[in-house]
Length: 430
Ligand SMILES: *Cc1c(COP(=O)(O)O)cnc(C)c1O
Image (cartoon, rainbow, N blue to C red; front, top):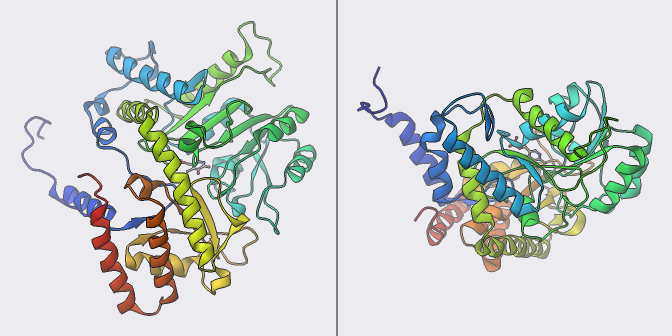
């Protein structure tokens, strides 16, 4: 076996495929709301020698030697994310958003305890109580949703459901909800029943970081997020808290209850649900958080929102129906039934023109999850490529062209060629 320093045979099989994937990313229109394009330095950190290091534990408290350098890197990531969100505590080790949520549940719940989250078929995430996820298998999941007429959450119904089901953890946050959240009201509901309020801000984290949406940290006991969606970091997750609160476990602690909760959460991550942290990814998180602290990132976040507004308007102008009528964040959910299309047909047709979207259930959908009546689109990735409002109109024009000609392959090929040459104006890693 050759060592790293004597390797001569490059693995062309894998690297040729990576080159192909880069070409795909460069030449198409990316509208998957959970995706984004990281900077070169974020990728550089993620591909660094830090992948060689074991560092179970936390900075200054490791189970392995040789952690002096990774301690400084992880501490930088922690300090930067605390500054970015005004948090007083953070754990940056969760390998993903799902891992962050599972660690919270392990820290706060016993098997069989009740959780209350946003209905998965209305845009909620599978880690908020899906029967195929640990959150739905080990705990008792209950749900609130949007109103059929408005497509918006009715907080009176959230309250009613909370009082009836009495969850130990009330979860807010979603994967396909285009409106902002009323954290003040949610905290009041949680306080009535002594529940912990968890905000999972995986999708809009980058907009929240720059003050462009309501601030969940002020009102929610615990906040989780992914780092790779609007936050534009490497794939990963994290957990944060800001304010102290009375712990619901009846444990008296002289140190303040946030200290107790933070140690429960730290143990929920490691050794509760993970082993060694991915220090190369944590370094990439630190780089991304540094970028997110900059003025440039503020401009990007403002543009993400402006682009979503422009895209929503362009869809409405072409007669498409957006759930809730518009968007406050970076994404929107489009009900395709008024156009006589399914989500599956839209996804499969648009990909032929190198436009990537995902089919998505709409609230009260009459079709199966494999077919669906909707599609979800977001503007984070194309904003990172440098696109502005007028480009959103052009994208919607392409989408409409393709969907209205879904059985005309020649027409779709023409659109595809136009898109491939247009995308050259938005270089990815120039
Ligand atoms: C994307 C997402 C997650 C999961 O993130 P992974 O990194 O894919 O595990 C969790 N919660 C919400 C609301 C999400 O949108």
